[in-house]
Image 1 (spheres, rainbow, N blue to C red):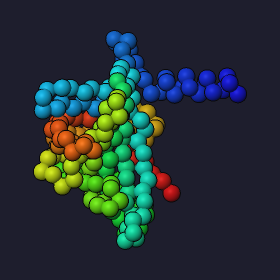
Image 2: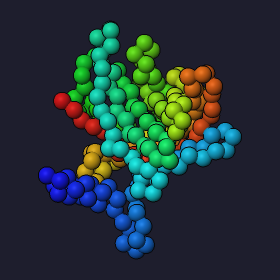
Image 3: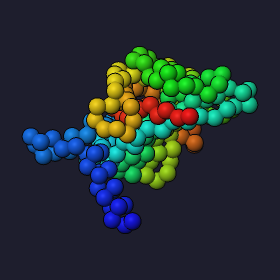
Image 4: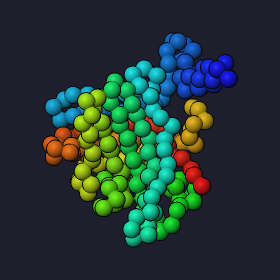
Length: 193
């Protein structure tokens, strides 16, 4: 059993980190990069300074009987964790077509997954190494754009890859606010029953 576990781990590492045969470097296309208003930069690149998890999908029913679908791509590295959550309210649990339709190129508002104030849109959550959590402010005039969405031709972990750009304010629990702008490319669309 131990040998099987080691073999599976080695296979996962091989699949997740393709090498560029010309340069011998890891050539994973997944990344998150953000610059804050003071000029600090956070870069997470799979295989170099972190990883892009395989996306997550699921949802919850709220008290009004609606279903909040949450699809996200998650990045972690250098002690930071970043979730980009795509949020959509449905009258019932969505099918695979409705989930795939959540990822169209174009602009999206900033939403909220807070069960008391659910809003369609996108939510960015950034957790610092010390545990301070920053969340995009719902309804703000910042911008979030999906610039590309195509079938995942890199690995088999999710059916799609989504790229985008954003500019927004993030608020911490202590109500402090930072302005960030950046880009990302991550695995997306997780279908469920």
